[in-house]
Length: 386
Length: 254
Image: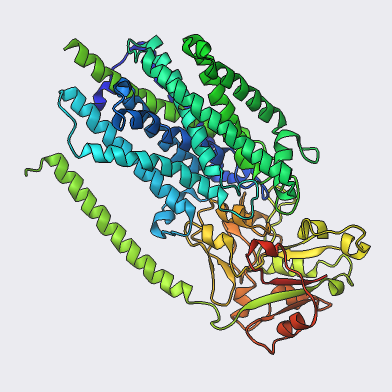
């Protein structure tokens, strides 16, 4: 089936070559980081996690969001999603691989990463996170491979596949819950120490993920002959709307608890994020951009007239995605370290090495998704012509 | 059921991988058994720092120098890459949110010595995904620099900022090499280990020994006749962030 990936138009190959060039730059940047040490990043003794871990966190959400197409299709028999479940699953595969790579490049001793499996430590949420992510990747590979294979052969999927699909639903929830537990279980970091973190992670995942899927579906319609139809896109838009509303609701819960209680440990982090602290305004403009984007997205999504207009829906999906990316991919991780437990206000901003490596990992993710989508679309096209 | 070539290869690879993993796991258990049993059973090491005494010698850095020299702690000269096992901090940073108004200048201005608290309930140990940091029976929170993958989860979990990471190659930044103690590689976390290597030889920690005014008292809390136990019973002491339930084993007389 994968052989379909090796035949394509000139545009397809140009796109792959552009991605490969970016990946190549990232490999060089990684080798530089590998030999110099993580000192070439913006991270420091006080801010020990940065852009890499933030991207990992954001992408776990994208991976988990596949459940938003799998669940309606397989549990509620919502047939309109038949065409896009495979797209959701393939997106999840690309996202999980990116997650793993972001963890890998963040390691001080990447060659020792196998120690996590040689010395399994159930005490550590990182152990559970690697288990759940690995399991989720395997589940999605199995499910998408067999469904597409059966579709190609024109036979019904094997009976054992259904329970595997059902298992993948709570599993998707688990990957982002465990990722939230990485943070929210640390007494040392009051900003993360919030029971609403896992629910909010899921809400951001189920809004940013489907928003991305909307954009991908509309893009496919434009550049290929593959059209999922407007009905499933509108359903995805409604899912995005509800999840985004929940996300904003949870965010306001966080802000209320942090600021009204006045506990300095909590309040000072929010102060840093939205107003700046001790002369450090690093994230302030970003957080307000994220806020404005969130408001714009909600207006566009909540008014049915706007939501049903596909041109405006593109804007809405972009604003949701960007707003959440800023919130999770820039703000959430770093703010846990600022101010530090000793009351200092350190600074952090990714260096060009971090930016290049991150861009390359995203390029690799895009490459994987492109190739997998190409395979799926080729199979579908063959079925039509036969 | 017939097996084609592809399935046969898959099964063979699977069996081989399982065998390999099994062997590795067994050897790991053996190693863990050996390693985890170390330390002094029945002891509970702790430290008391008398800041009044410490402040008698203004500007003294003997304990810091002794520790960093003994343990080949590199000096990078910038805050970003900084590695420190023991250091000085003002009261407001050592005891965050505990500073009252109108405190004596002595308390406000004079530094507090900070290092690993060797918590009874160490959050860094719980989060480590490879057991590269673990708690010995005698209370020391130890580090295995050969196993650490450098994920820095322990640094996120430590409420005291006690851990440092080798952001760059440390060996080129060691002022004077002590051949009796290992150096570290880049990409691993390090911190104070209560001088486990000196304790094993019956010596006190290097910082304690170097203090000219005997402001640091090291001892065994399980022994009711130890100096530290007696002092804890006589004078009111403070610990950093006791509300977190980590139970630090470093006590301060302010």
